[in-house]
Image (cartoon, rainbow, N blue to C red):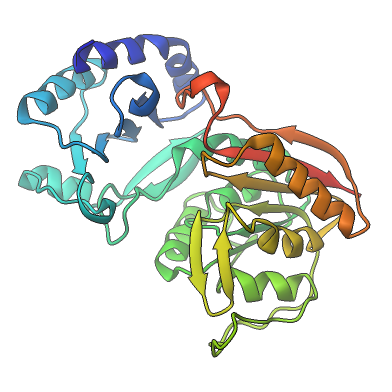
Length: 335
């Protein structure tokens, strides 16, 4: 099947989803998920007033780009931005025509279920400031935050925290190491009039989490510990844990394959009895049930139990093979 045919078919399969998105004030979603829909490493998204094409394995030819653009503009006549990330370290390598470059580098406002988010299609980082496959997580948090205290770990641009505040949370604490990401998070809070509810802590997750859990802050052997914000031990009604696949710091190593518990244990200790912790793991090779069982064992080792659980499945604009999406999300209610 040609690329044009694959894209046309993907759009046709999303007809009901697109109608639903428009009715629910959502103008950011995936229109083509290439890994599953016929072109590995090619993703096409709508981000507000633009189409965003991204390639991660193979650069599009001029003819292919023109072909894809013609299909997209027939669906909705918006600027088409192409970010080629097929070469080194997933960095954007290609130049754009001047008017498209100016647009891509300018701040835009997008909407998801009526919540406003800031977005840039090109900036000092790599992604457009909102991960679209996390929509179900934001919806869950918004629906379960009324009068709750919420801890948002590895918050990036605080989409989860903003959704919590919009859901009526009494307090939202966002923790991330990146000042750039937190600045975007503050902008998201401002756009939605929830700045008074939201707090932003720039910190390595390990010392923040361990302090909140009432544990001693340690580090990797032989590493001198840098300064970090001092936080009191605090438990929250709702904790959201969405770590990256792998990262090292003087305080510890984030490793979603071999040591999810290193983060999960203090996050669980920072969750109140009767509270909920939402855990995310985006590594495809991690088997869902084995991962869940390891979380439950960790809870039980602390003398607590999981009283209920709910899997959160990505929306249909992110199809998967055999309903086994790489991004796994489960909400555990703890007693």
